[in-house]
Length: 285
Ligand code: PLP
Image (spheres, rainbow, N blue to C red):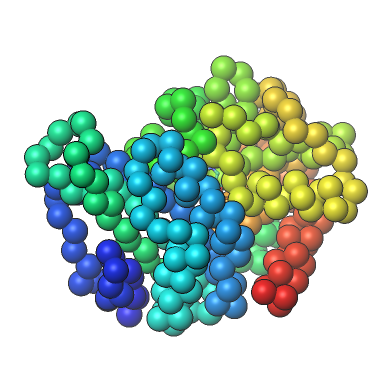
């Protein structure tokens, strides 16, 4: 049985109820985070809570908890659920109102909801083969740096991949790479790791930061710069990164092989560094 947290109480997920007048339901008016938990320890929780705070500030929802309180709630939820490795979904909406009205309620009572699932990272088979992706024009809004629950465009774009039997949709805007429908994208050209710079047009991924830190730590040549669509299509390697997928090779894009169609050496190395780092951090706490 999965235990969730809703507005101060821990309860079975199947029993949790919110009002249909909640603005999260009516407008997708909320912020969220997904925090991976390894061996019952949340990974990079301070960074996730900080990003949540930035989203809440930007969308003018009062942050209902200080960082330490968020960590306590997440810790308690992890303890109450059975899985050793978990994926924690954390959601804050602007809360309910009396009537459906675009303008904010005079008094905001944010709804706080967290739930846990088993964390399922890519299997050895998927890591060995990589995944197929398609591309699409990025038609999302101009604040993709905010992790808001209004994800209709991301859902439509992800479904483009699913409909073609693929795992992810790589997004291009005005001829440049932005990110994936639910991941950041890195490429390798001439042995150099390239990442698009953070901007309003992509989510500043927690995994993205870890990958760049690991590149610096291990002396891997890397550059953060705008990446042309054509550079992605002719890259030696393309990877996606996210908290649940970690570092995963994209080995075909729009039906054409990336490089030789197998996960490349730089990505395999980064995946190994990521696992080593994660295990070290988890051991030290
Ligand atoms: N970009 C988008 C649009 C995402 O939805 C996600 C994660 O879900 C990411 C990037 C990766 O972010 P993180 O590494 O913090 O999970």
